[in-house]
Image (cartoon, rainbow, N blue to C red; front, side, top):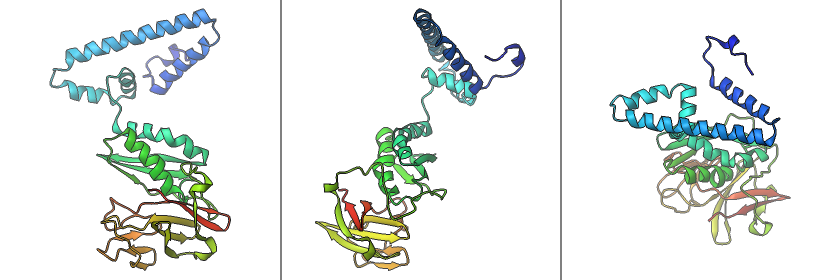
Length: 289
């Protein structure tokens, strides 16, 4: 525990105060059960007293026209903010709620050597950046749509647009393989599309899998698969022109980056990805309806 005398005149930081609380908790671990229960009950009573005091204080001041601005200013202090949040006086920010949603899928990302961070939250838009093995992984689109984006939109409905921010580089896999934590399907759900050796680096193929038309691309070590449907009107793009890595829809000219599926004409939309993997000599696809 810190020496109070040595800290005289210093303003304690949030980290130091939390550290003091943790030190007390560790100290209490050595007490007998009755002493621990008594200390816990006292802490709960003090917590309840503080919460009720804050509730009454807010109730008494809320009609003051300057109160809202004063509270926002006070909450800029990390200690004030932490205490008000603990007692429910302040609601979590949109950024914090997006971060909390991301936290629900983070264990899955970490289990595959990757991670993600909130790059930005502006208005109703959130941007998420993949880190580690997820950054540049051929499975990143599936992970983003089936895991990250779904979690955020399910838990933070105010966020209507979730985008993948540009990665920092240095991640991904060393070979033409991928494993997504959100692609754990039975082998009977995968369909062989074509042999890997039949798809050259930089090549794009339009093929039919059962009743579904798909676009399969290979760029260096990344194999991707998209639904063959323009995000504009859902029309197939089999006859579209491909210049380098850009596919142009033959119907209305919408342009797509085949490496990512991003729409260059209307950045708010993109091609729908399908799960894809390389197993043995073959490229296999799982259709996402």
